Image (cartoon, rainbow, N blue to C red; front, side, top):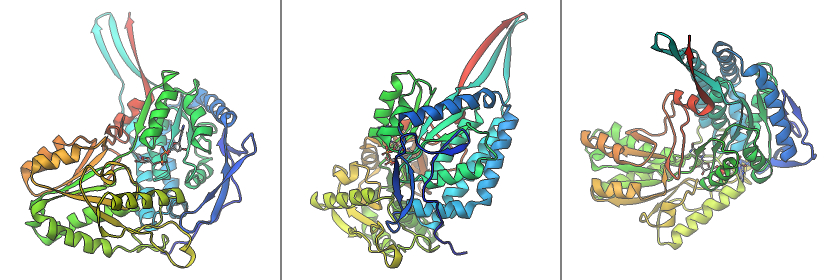
Length: 491
Ligand code: NAD
């Protein structure tokens, strides 16, 4: 199957009360594709008045949506999943063009994972049972779960539709209405979503307000009329959003940045070639899918006695990565999501060089050919240095990994945990003791062992330390979107 660039309208509105509406102030911003720097479409540059209009529409819809049964809501979520699956190729092409990631990722990961997420929460909400306890022969204790009401959600550009699904599916399953702001860099797939789902989701239940953080995101997160703020993005933005929400004593969940260690113990070299190949892929492919993944294994730690032999293979594999045309199914690394991101990544490579890091692979912008010449591409880059360097400590969010060595388990853990972040980590070993003890000692919310970058809907995901709090995925997610009422009834 070959994929082509999708077609777009000249401009789009916000999606409020079940229809597209122009921003009240009449202002739009231009969204361009990072694959070729061409204009995609214009989107509303929304302000507080647009946010207020969306919150009004959401409360109006909540009057009936908040009273729907779990069965009714599960039916809506299943229909969403079916429609997403039916249009998987279209969604994937839009995502690739808007975000820059290669089509093999959006077809095989982003969109199928979003489908699965809606199905999972459709199932979870139906499987729940009520609970009542008889305290004595005259009194019963009832525990009732109620939706919060209207919730605010703000998402980033790195997985536009998947982050959207992670936020929207549990909030809808729990019976809330939503006002969501997508990232200004990637508004397209969410817009297509509400367009094709408008016959499935009742008007006003899901509202989209486009625009920039300080103009549209801030009034949304600050509103006293939303009952919760769910945020995914940078740690510094998360700190601001907590301040806004605190004025209303609103609960927040924070899915923030990361600087994930990926640790390779010497036992990985003692085993069969298949396992070693899996390790090499784990060191390379998951780090270089543009590097724009919050759990990107951006710090590689290799036990010193296998460093030369192991890295020789890693470098060889890195240099064999196919890069360029994001619509070619063979492309492994596509474009960075924006010019700003491109510039930031190159500036970090420069910082790394100035700090004395040795460039083992890449280190430059990548020149794509033909119609992608003007796009924003960076070579998969490996820097060798030590964990105190800025390139080891700060989130670059690009195809740049920083490599260092360690002597033993103790030093591996010291380096792994020597970071402000605590989102993801990888451990590669054939040693049974390390297989359990090392992940237990790592300060991170998700540790993959002998694998990397699986995101099943039933596995809780979230951060320690400055990577945030609260969890995404798993049925515990429903707890973030509901109130618990206890009724003690005496009769
Ligand atoms: P960002 O913080 O710049 O923006 C995220 C969203 O917040 C955007 O919609 C933006 O418009 C909005 N925003 C910005 N300033 C705001 C303000 N003052 N008030 C309200 N809203 C505001 O993040 P980004 O650059 O879009 O995304 C990359 C970051 O997201 C990385 O740090 C990455 O690690 C993180 N991320 C984390 C997870 C996770 O699950 N932990 C997942 C994906 C991405």
